[in-house]
Image (cartoon, rainbow, N blue to C red; front, side, top):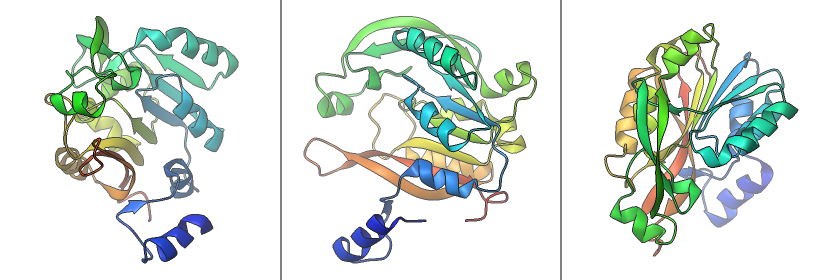
Length: 244
């Protein structure tokens, strides 16, 4: 599904028809992959200010987005967005494989905030933004438990940006992945930047056990010297439900 510009770059600049990392817009790829499928529910894990939910809802106007964001700095903005769009439903909890509470490490750069502790690698990549500014207690829920409590709401598309905690959250979603999910779009870590954070190999193995496989990889990020890849994003499709 490459557009003309990315196809030109692949052929003229990269000297090949395909490259390990896609130049396409992943949200447009998801839209194309889900064409012909009913998309009723979207789970946005690590919603921050809701920017990803806005993009996704634009592509799927009949869907509802359930946006999980435990960082209190985003609360008022998400509530205001929900007032403007009844399809948007903020959830002020973190996702995990258990229910209860946990400590959220709020960092100087909000994008580094995680339930995990930053590692030396993250401090090397972002020395000004990796420091922990505040630690707050936040509620934890599992995706399966939340779905059941909300009337078995279908979730066809899941997006994850939760800083190394993706696998833990997905372990709490095995029933939802089986029942309704068609695509998972997640941050992936080749060289972890958080203590005990999941690596791509672990996430890939878990999702394969649930019937998903990698479709493509997007937006790689490197260390400060540009020599080693640290993370990227990937689309995983349910092989029995999506024809690629």
